[in-house]
Image (cartoon, rainbow, N blue to C red):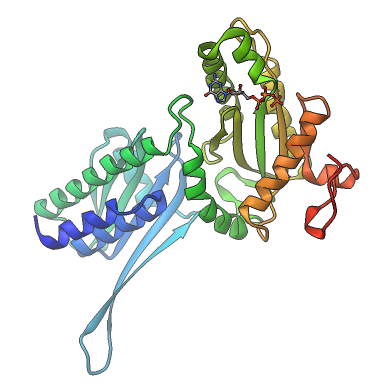
Length: 345
Ligand SMILES: Nc1nc2c(ncn2[C@@H]2O[C@H](COP(=O)(O)OP(=O)(O)OP(=O)(O)O)[C@@H](O)[C@H]2O)c(=O)[nH]1
């Protein structure tokens, strides 16, 4: 294996951030084969494109010097345009889970499946002026295998063993990038679903009186209840709105909605879904939800603090309810600590 390939693989495995390893993957492939156009399409469980990364490479020729190689990766989260030939070849790759190629007017389109820890997670497409040789194909397959294995390891380290949800460590790693995306996306059309996501909220969801469940029925049943509640919560959100296990019996989610009313309805659905579920032995379990519409100008921890205060109020007001930070503020039940006031709850 050449030193340069080793160094590309080293870059892929040197990072702990999923988007950063996708960037390294594109850079590794882009500099291995001469491509005119290289993209990574992230797919959800329904094979809809949820994110696109486009790689560009240019040789800048500066007067009186050697050419300078520049690389760039652009990430697109909304209004993603997928060319018709890419869409059509994708159908073949999604079905066969094998690389496929097609001739185009300008040369060829080559596509590889990207296998993540839970099966197909995306596609790599590239336009070439001439068909790709076997050697290059093998090289790319090798890089993709290293990527898949590393992705699986990374995913495992960021998941909670009991519930399979992302853990707090994953949230700490992802939250800064999530913030920069929220700042950009908060008023953009969410073209994928033909809906307009106007706002995002951060919610903290906590099981009520969970200590009693453990004390009365034991930790093993407690664990089972935790698992069931985590599944019920996850089932209320889209795949793109991951739920994190934030603490022992506490979950955190960042979700988008069209209006404050739609947001409240979303969290109310979580509460009522748990309330309406029949749990073994315990029979009934409830959750309290505190949420705050995200203000990207505030830090992630300030926003989490707001949702936490709303949760605290939900618990104080009798549990099994949903409270929103802004609503509580309006009703004068809490005061905004940023202006030096004290909270009532
Ligand atoms: N079985 C089980 N219990 C857990 C786990 N993590 C945390 N817990 C328990 O969750 C309980 C949380 O108790 P508290 O923080 O007092 O809250 P609570 O009893 O749910 O009461 P409220 O939140 O005020 O409604 C503790 O008894 C923890 O031991 C876990 O992984 N498995």
